[in-house]
Length: 357
Image (tube, rainbow, N blue to C red; front, top):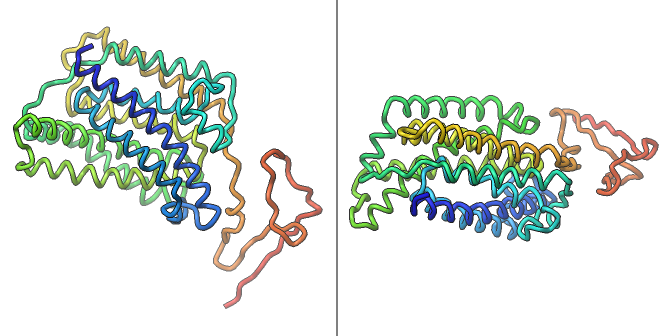
């Protein structure tokens, strides 16, 4: 491993620790906000008033900055798969062996399973294989050279396809299936995320060249990459919040990681031609490492219990004229966390209210 790849590797590991912790903290902030107002999934922004959500956001920003710098020193095919380490941090606690992962246990009450250790070990082994066989970072001398890579027909075709699929998911799928199908929100985040990484890579290289004495701020291409980055980040944050608010953290994490990694590696391979000049054995080894990581994340996902449904959804009108309320002895029924059984039906009254104009 070259010195630049090693630097990128260390920064990626630090980034994973911060980003993984931020998922847990932000999830807890969303839970607290949903108790006082509309949930993020239905257009509520009460989480913006929750200090804990902002702590999670700041933690994520620190992690993303480390991740940003990592992309300057190492190729995306090395940095992106290391995101599996953040899944270990935010999804499981490994029986207390990973201190930062304990956040998931104490804040979100997510229980542990014996298969957690195997899943985490697979993620670590797969990440190691990917790091050892990652291609070297290619030397780029100007943002104009990056722009030429971004405007080549192959990458333009990928970008157009990504935007078209994202618009379909946002305009058609999200309103209809977003709150029931986890792949809608995460798909939007993952596809847009691949374009975010390409923009981050371009801006990072521009900053590095500027620090070295070749000012890249005079080129309009630099500012185009900045605008693309800001737009993609806002879209990602919005739909990631929706995914976290609707689904269990341990379900969101591995699926998001798998899709995000796949789309990012594909985009990077098209734009930067990362695998050009690599031997077949190195490419196969890296793919095996990636498959090992995906296997680990699948195990982490399969052993996790789903979040308990939030009762406030029962008060959502089913139609403009009919609302349904579930009541017991005049008070809304709340299921105890330790009691998963259904409440006695003789204590429940279903009341229909017709609203006439």
